Amino acid sequence: MFDSLYQRIRHGSYLKSEDGIKQYAEKCMGQLINKVTKKSAFYREQDENLLVEKANLRLREEELREKPVLDAGDFFSVRRRLWFENFTIGAVVLAAVFINYTAVTAFLSGGTIGLAFLRWVVAATLAVVLTGGGLVITERLIETAAPREDQHTTEEISDAQMSSVITTLWTILLIGIEIAIMGLAEVRASMLAQAQDSSFLYLGYIAAAMLLPLVAGALRWDSMRYLDIYKSTRAIREIEGRLAQIDSTLRQNEEYESNFYKVQSITYWDRLNEFKTYKRNYDESNGHAREKLPEGHFARTYDAFQNESYKRYTADLRDVRSTSVRRLELMEDATAGAKSGKSKKQPMPVSPKGDEGEKASGEKSSSEESPSEGSSYQDVQSVR
Image (cartoon, rainbow, N blue to C red; front, side, top):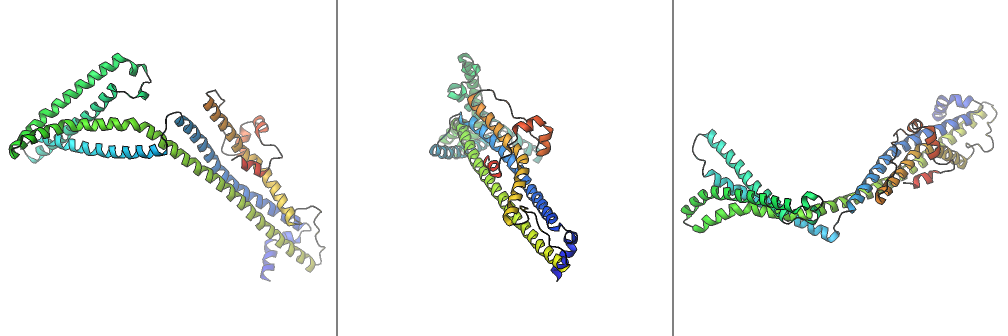
């Protein structure tokens, strides 16, 4: 009883109308198409962003593959080597800074707390400058004396005379900074040697202060030989993983959209079928003539309802999906042109608003590039 009363209150105008079933069927069909089209627009916007990202990643991958890359075994070996060398460089730098700091503090002592703190800051700064300067100069000197093959890309680098001048300059700088370190370390080394009565401690302290920056610079140069190829290979591996993730997301969106359409079409058919029952009961109880649906009307059977909803849904999707299809084709043309080295026409920017953006771009462009009238929902989805 309450259910019947609810139907009369909610659909009273449709129950009293002679064409109530046809009118309510159109209402259900409109609500169905409106709901599934909104959901499709959400997935379409997400797919648009993913397709643009995918095209950019492919272009980036093609650029990276023009350079040498590491295979799987070499990649992990080089990664372990870089990790070990970076850890060693950090430890060597800390040791060199500590030794140079203690060497400089031998000249700074006494005074108030404020002056003592200022002296410590100056000593730490000077220790960092000496260690960092020795590291950088050693690395640059080795690069200039034994350049890598991938560095011969400009005339300045390949010029022998310029290379000789730069090598001489780095050598003079390295000799100067080593003399400065030796002079500063000698005082602290003498103090330690007298306290411990050991000449080896004197030589060892000075040798450590002078050689640790050189060791750090040499290790840095060695790691730089593999750093570029390692980063390129790692970037390619990350791009491949992201491309696989994008493909998976596109397939999931397609499946979600299809399932959403199926569920909603069944739901609205159930509503329509339920209303048909109440409408016929209402007509019989009130002595009205039973409403007869025309032959072939979509409200007569489930299959007819599904066919009509599918036809209207795909008719709407042809326009809103054409942007994605065209943009993808233009991006593929740009990718092919980049690989062959030929000039290609750049893709026109497309408005993300779908149909409104299509109208703004011109009627001629829309008529030439939109899918044909016979295209189906599966054809549009297969382009992804």
